Amino acid sequence: MLIRLAILFSGNGSNLENILEKLHKKTFGQNTFEIVLCISNNKDAYGIQRALKYDIETIIIEHQKFKTREEFDTNLVKLIKENQVDLTILAGFMRILSPVFTQNIKAINLHPSLLPLFKGANAIKESYESDMKVAGVSVHWVNEELDGGKIISQKSFDKDRLNFEEFEEKIHTLEHEILPLTIVQIFEDD
Ligand code: GRF
Image (tube, rainbow, N blue to C red; front, top):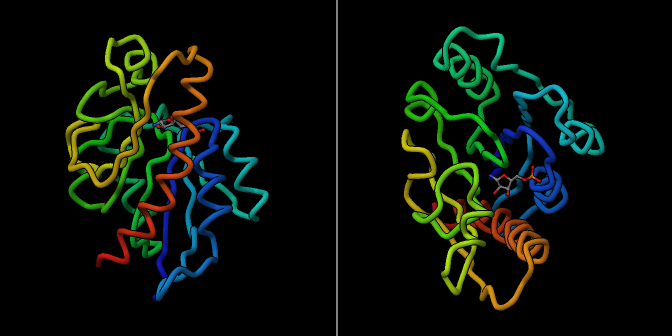
């Protein structure tokens, strides 16, 4: 089966590039994956350059241009539906999505903590500073609650005596492992 993916991002785009490298036009078992749509709400996102390496032109939809969250989301939904996307991946997409999006689009999100702990935008810092002995990353289904949908996969590690830079690097390394694997697994289980 050909699986059509959309990726939404807002900034650096290392996860976007990692998915492109590992999954774009690649076959796993019965399934071949293709990233058919990249959307950013930020015209200066570095990920736009990364997608170009794969000849993918990112569509920019600037949220500031819409009066309401729902209007912005309506545009996202329209584009995703028009492109007959099987799964949408939020990879560093820094917008809260309304039910207009969550009730119409099958999407997963990558989050840099062991959910349900440390939801929100400061997860890495909060999980580093907590007295927990382990930390990790999660992939979950997107619903109307921020970082609150059902967890699909997680990876954890011992914090040991990592300094903050080492900790952050470990998080990103695990993110790059878990997200493509999870995408492939979702369709294996289907
Ligand atoms: C990742 O840490 C992800 O967990 C969070 O945003 C970051 C995106 O990084 N949601 P990048 O833009 O993919 O490099």
